[in-house]
Length: 438
Ligand SMILES: Cc1cc2nc3c(=O)[nH]c(=O)nc-3n(C[C@H](O)[C@H](O)[C@H](O)COP(=O)(O)OP(=O)(O)OC[C@H]3O[C@@H](n4cnc5c(N)ncnc54)[C@H](O)[C@@H]3O)c2cc1C
Figure 1 (cartoon, rainbow, N blue to C red):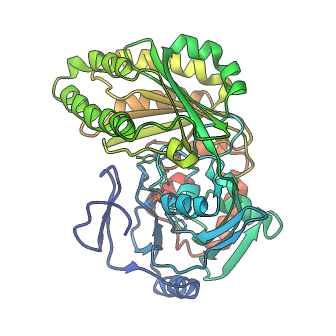
Figure 2 (tube, rainbow, N blue to C red; figure 1 turned 120 degrees about the horizontal axis):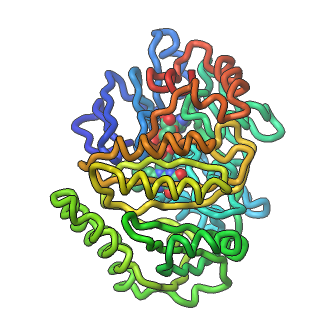
């Protein structure tokens, strides 16, 4: 079942606990025909349907005001074409299940984000991404998909079949219909060597072009109130030659990255004046380490410290200016920021509502520990990011609406045309999505 904190089947909330909904009907179709039947029945009743994934979006994208559709019981045969490295899965499969499935066939996704709890449909629908200057987000790995539209039609699309629908539907926030099946282009399974090291923000920005050229995957964290940053690069290597000892990986990933950090956050929330020292301590505690492992195990790690997040995709050349403005914003806030700022990179793609549509991007993610004030912080950066041509992550907090977003997406009006065609009765709209997309 999607989401967390369920009191009963009708109640739903997201991972962060900041979005809730309640419904009179939870639909759990077990076949594509049943999805189509349930869509037609909702249309006849004049009711709306909201498909949900794992509830890992911070925005109300998965909050519905009609019937909620949970795809976890949808039975679709998994098909694996080893020679072409194509894998077809039910859209409601989680990335964690997918990674295990792929590993069993010696395949992998070319890139992943920080966690693997999301469903395939949920991840692609909001433009979920990892980092890598030459890698697109997860939706760029989609080779084909099957959608049940707002008329109950089952539509299969790819670059060759309904190419416009394909470009619109790979990232569509659940507004074109229910994704039931997704075919993903995979690569041979690979091992990554991770190298994490402390550095300075100035140093990492000065070296950035060289770092992006030299490494497959680059990201860094900047610690507010300090000049310190933690740089992480991941590169493909032939063998798993430096696995972290089990206890060490537990200590670093779980204990240090979650349990100790959770304590520090609680302390900082109770005594905000300590935040600058906590930030410096967090930067200091993360030393240098190198390790290798199966790609998905290196890309993804558990996140048990709850937070709220906003993330903006910026034209890559605007990154230094954005971070400079962000430093001034944080220093001027009437409250403190406990989480580091995360910076990642993606390559340009052609998906109409992708944050990286038509341009290489740098993503700047702001986090704040649950229960701490965040809105003035996020809003102040949103103003800067908007001025720099930024596009907000569809699954992470922001306050933009259709009027302000349309100029940021060259294919915005094409998307709206496809949407009116596929969902004429607006069965897949919600009040939030009406404001967001018009
Ligand atoms: C701890 C954490 C870590 C994260 N890390 C990253 C990261 O590294 N990179 C990144 O880019 N993002 C990240 N995110 C954001 C997350 O990847 C996205 O919000 C993603 O959409 C969540 O997927 P989900 O399965 O939970 O979908 P949900 O949040 O449940 O739904 C997302 C959207 O997909 C639609 N949808 C779901 N299923 C279907 C379907 N079958 N058909 C049509 N529409 C559907 C929903 O209606 C909704 O609009 C993170 C979020 C959290 C909480």
